[in-house]
Length: 200
Image (cartoon, rainbow, N blue to C red; front, side, top):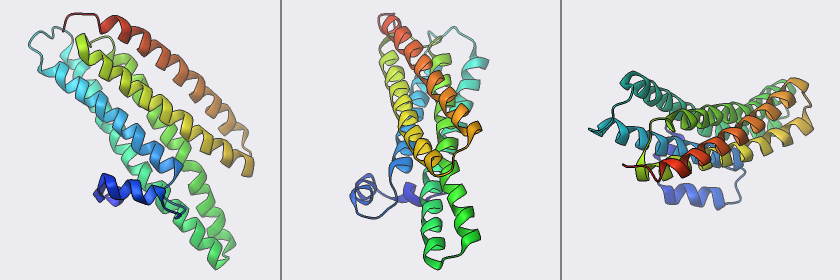
């Protein structure tokens, strides 16, 4: 699980900037999505500590737990992408057809799984908008922007994979994820404009 998460931010940046094939777009997008989820978690933690909060604590705790779950998934996918790509390159080097095909499937599946998880995080931002007030609404909006950007980036990798291995079911899901992400981002940002002007 640790993988890139044991590295410093500086060393991760440098490894991304290197000529090595991984980490690359999918891992970077998953890390970005994880940061978006972390910002959502911060917002929810602040809301939970406010004495003025008079909302549904059960709903708040449910959102906090769901955010933790998505953070764990995205953390895993960032590492999985690197491992899957390295396994694919090794299988190609050894010219083992079965292993290469299996490794390619893993490479192709990771960005779609990460996009699903990031979309779930964006859904949580939309749900959280109903209980957030004051200046932290801007942080909620930032979390949504990071997640939506990560989704868009992950779907670019899905598109590239579909060119190699066309799959109608994946194409349909890819389009649905993109459309829902755009709707949810628009919804969150519209609410943030209102919430930011509310009393803290």
